[in-house]
Image (cartoon, rainbow, N blue to C red; front, top):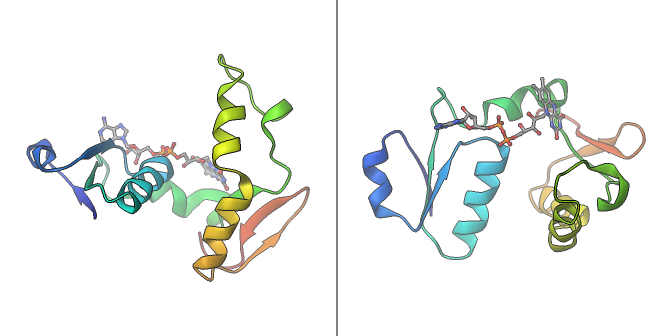
Length: 118
Ligand SMILES: Cc1cc2nc3c(=O)[nH]c(=O)nc-3n(C[C@H](O)[C@H](O)[C@H](O)COP(=O)(O)OP(=O)(O)OC[C@H]3O[C@@H](n4cnc5c(N)ncnc54)[C@H](O)[C@@H]3O)c2cc1C
């Protein structure tokens, strides 16, 4: 179960407390919920997921077909992207988009955008 709450008071009644209802926090909450955990998301802004709506000019460039951990990311820990992307590859995100029937297209160089709205 995922719920967005406004006060820290409610945080006492959950398994996972996530700060920030952006793309990362919401994804984290979805996966916590799928594992049977009760997740709460704290958001200081007026609405969850606001930046998602403006991403990609309103159509969200949600992934890139050619994203791979070797060579595309800068990080202090060079191994982080390798383990993260092996455990959650681009194909898995595309599967989720397909499962929800969201129409998309490749714009250029592997960039995938929603056909309609982010
Ligand atoms: C105009 C624009 C277009 C973009 N287009 C794309 C795109 O097409 N594709 C793409 O992959 N990326 C795009 N990005 C980058 C995009 O911002 C990130 O991919 C994505 O939004 C990052 O999500 P996030 O959850 O890490 O951070 P955010 O979306 O910034 O979410 C963090 C959330 O945490 C909240 N928060 C912060 N501190 C606290 C606190 N102390 N307590 C409670 N809440 C807190 C914030 O209010 C915010 O809602 C774009 C960015 C911009 C600005």
